[in-house]
Amino acid sequence: MTWIFENWARFWEVTEVHLRLSVVPVVVGFLLAVPLGWWASRSPTARTILFPLANILFTVPSIALIVITPVLLGVKILDEINVIVPLTIYTVALMVRSVADALSAVPGHVTAAANAMGFRPLRRFLTVDFPLALPVTIAGLRVATVSNISMVSVGALVGLGGYGQLFTEGYQTDHTEKVLAGLIGTVVLAVLADGLLLLAGRLLTPWARAGR
Amino acid sequence: MIEFRAVTKRFEDGTIAVDELDLTVEAGTITVFVGPSGCGKTTSLRMVNRMIDPTSGTILVDGRDVMTVDPPTLRRGIGYVIQQAGLFPHRTVLDNVATVPLLSGWDKRKARTRAAELLEIVGLDPAFGKRYPAQLSGGQQQRVGVARALAADPPVLLMDEPFSAVDPVVREDLQTELLRLQAELDKTIVFVTHDIDEALKLGERVAVFQTGGHLAQYAKPAELLSAPANDFVASFVGRDRGYRTLTFLHADVPVHPVATAKLGERVTVTGWILVVDDENRPKGWLSGVDGEVEVREQDLVSGGSLYDGTSLRGALDAALSSPSALGVMVDDAGAVSGVVRADDVIQALAKARAAGEVPK
Ligand SMILES: Nc1ncnc2c1ncn2[C@@H]1O[C@H](COP(=O)(O)OP(=O)(O)OP(=O)(O)O)[C@@H](O)[C@H]1O
Ligand SMILES: [Mg+2]
Image (cartoon, rainbow over all chains, first blue to last red; front, top):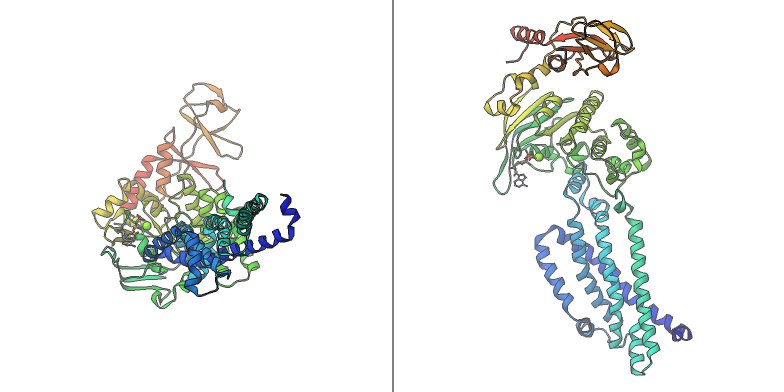
């Protein structure tokens, strides 16, 4: 703990990097997963393509994906893109299923009623289907966020910032306090992000607790 | 007015759900589609607002071919109520009711004011407006469903088994409420049910569908009962159809005077005496004690159903359910106006038949 206070500027700097490297993929991945999940919820063909693909991508070890990304994208080895792209892929792989399941779980009589009242497809999606899918979607988002926060550390192995740097440096110089600082940072960040999403979910879906 | 002209629906798997349907739903009436499960009632209904498109034939709503109208626009002008109400769980009751006005571009305040009005029209406390659908009973949700369908004041209302998921008592309330609403609003209503009693109670005209999507008979309720078009209709309208026919007969039955007494009075009872309250409303019967007695609450035998002077069915039922075999007739205020006898009802029926008032 004392290391954190004595090196506050450094600690804060890696925290910022860590946050950026984990939050950007969650946001981008989420934005990609929503239309893909919507597609999968309506089309059996989309499901037979997307779900196995998502499963395969998820089994690829993160270090392999991080190492191979610069080769595939032709970017510099130290570019943050090398962590952001793989983690975005993981987020999409994880979220596509949540979003698709959540949208499929919207009761048929509710969507039928919406159609019967004259909703056009986009408006129905934005104001009926998606809000009703939010509780399950947010649960998926929490898993994706927490796992991203833990995975960002792997980026240190290819020289990128974040708490992972504290792990590698601490390990190389036999500096346990530094490793511990990275660990504490990761856990605190994960707990905070998870709590924030939980809270946001509650505020966005007051109806989900009505009638219990 | 809704016209089905030679409408056929064949689904992709080859099922013929509706077969050459020709039928006209008159404006301002409740028309009921009734029939066994799978006979094509829902399919027929959903072709009106294009939730399903016909394979062949034409459907006209107020003279306009529905296939020429873009579905969302068409649907905003046609109210739709379904069995589970289909309310939006994530919106308050008020916002649920305001849905179609908002879709049609009304401003939020006006839509909400209209929604609050509608809650009252369907008999719900406006305080329910703030709740979510999950916080209402099934019957209340169904009322909200009706309010939502009426919000933009559409001339046509489609109702698909709207009351079949609630218990019999609530169902009766909702049916009575619908008739009351219709008397005020004068909509063109198509109501789907598989319950023949509901069909006969609500329908000004009833279309009986037969499995395979055939229209077996389209007639007024009294005619369905007295002159079913075929054996299918006869068996579908049920064993009691002779008795049910009485519902639609309003012939006069002789009303006899009846001896009455009030609680606390001393009376001499021979046979039965009707005990009434201070407003002359029936409380029960007192029987067979000889000599003078005081009329006491605990000695009363409770009475049968009351006859309100409308149908022969009510008269007969009042007589049959009364312990004294005398059916109590009451006026609008609920005060006793006399009694009717079962044999008089049978005679009135015979007279009505001879006069040709019972449809053949
Ligand atoms: N999408 C569909 N694809 C194939 N067949 C269908 C489809 N929808 C309905 N059907 C069939 O069409 C027939 C009529 O169905 P419909 O839903 O109109 O019956 P219904 O009279 O409303 O029955 P219920 O009283 O059970 O609601 C049934 O045999 C049904 O199985
Ligand atoms: Mg049906």
